Length: 485
Image 1 (spheres, rainbow, N blue to C red):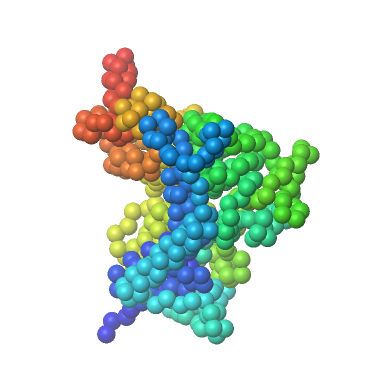
Image 2 (image 1 turned 135 degrees about the horizontal axis):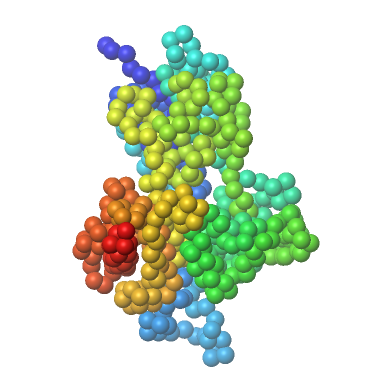
């Protein structure tokens, strides 16, 4: 009987469980050590729960913003003087019970798939034993099991995929009732009447938009000049305009210094001396990697200044036989990237064909309403001369399907190389932009040209028709510039 390669994976999120599936498929002996349930934060407290909550908010927004324009009549008993009152409400307790049920079901499905593939799943906390590799090149992982016992596992390779947790401010510690982080909101039974969201990155913007749609009065506190400072500036401007138009109080250049609970209310003190009050406060001020107490540095694993694990493009750390994937690496806080890093790690160690991680082909989405989807090079790359590209932006207002559906906000933007017309990036701001970005992702990943995009048939009428129309405009511009050259 031949030797079987032993793989130990610490952490069962997308990076961990996808790696387990690949390694088991390639014939390795795989053990996944996880303390919360497979799926990790992505399934249990982040992506799946938040997007399930947002799905309900999306229905509310779509109804509120378009039912009158589309000619829909809602019969109710609202007195004439209060005709502007909401005619649709939400049972947050019921919504959150559904959120938790779906998250748990997804976790169980993942566990079943990993077990079916032949991997062993251990409930507990894993860490490296702090030693360098053994004489045969193996590593030792110490597992503190859920039942209190300790087990030592020998591994030919270890993948660390322990994720990250919400960052906490010393003067704004969550209590799980009035001051919350994003993992605690699903325990609420009643809708926050006045919600203050601290942090205007992706998490803050998504929750602020969702709770506003569900019926909360929302104040978004941003320390930056605009919401979503890391996203396309045109897209962020559209979203901020939509937020304000729908009644959100967006406070730019306002840094929160402390949050205090006073009875059934909260007070948020700003650095400039102002104090704002509400019934609840959601802290969305980033995440910190789960790297402490794991024997990483003692085992030769290099950490960055931010505490993340340094990795190369095939997920190797600085320690032989140790790989890392997901949020713990600080590359891109996306489930899709974590999964790719985990798969790449296993392909590389087990000797299968592998392509290094290419971040310029990663598509991502902000699940606000409208959604913001991006792929490839960005407007910042063009503005900062990191790439020379032609850019065309087409508002959705010109799209016939958008007019039919009452969609007023959003656009499609493409970036292409002058001369060749190769598509190198794109932005879509629209309902379901996460679905519309895929053809642009295919173009970026396969070096397709705007001519090829423009010549592909689209359904009429459709929102995807705007992708082809932008490509046609870029093709014309490309041709004109080539003639001038």
